[in-house]
Length: 242
Image 1: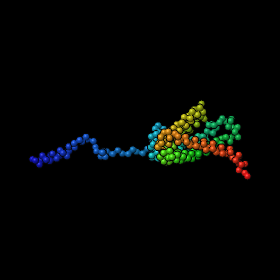
Image 2 (image 1 turned 30 degrees about the vertical axis):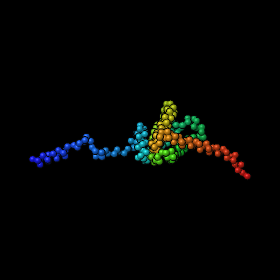
Image 3 (image 1 turned 180 degrees about the vertical axis):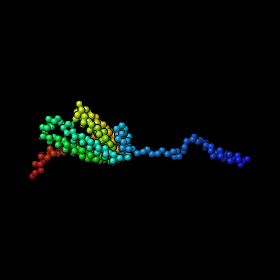
């Protein structure tokens, strides 16, 4: 009998909770949540439009470079095709453009569109290098690839430039609508690019804004200095002669 009592007590102790046990699992022994699935291309494009801060934060870490290159190329090619196909419809009136060297205006505009296409891609890389170097000097993180991706994704809303050009060419009052649309789109892109710089380089909002405008200010300053030096060259040339 005593043996049976002891066995029953041991079984109760084995299945009874410990003192102070609240039923919660011990740290590290609970169920492990599976990692979140990686974002698809549509996830990035959607969040750039509606939740840009979250999109750029994820892009700065994951660095989907192929998606960024595809966004820049697709938006640029579509804009180039629309500009070339519109011809005079998207530019000056037919009477005025026909007076400019008998169609030379159309060729010049097409050439400028093609040059602008290649320069836009080159400028994308140039800005990335400048912002990454200057941002690192300002105390930010060095994340060139992440910044390249974020700036590329910030170019996504420019896909709307093509329909705006078509509205401006053929719609009633289209030029006014196109002008207002381009202005709003420019402000939107500026906002997205500042967010991209802040997320990729881990800067404050003020430093990101300052860094964004540092590049155009530097270009203007260098241009003014170059013009001053060129203007002074004729005066310096006679003084240099014996």
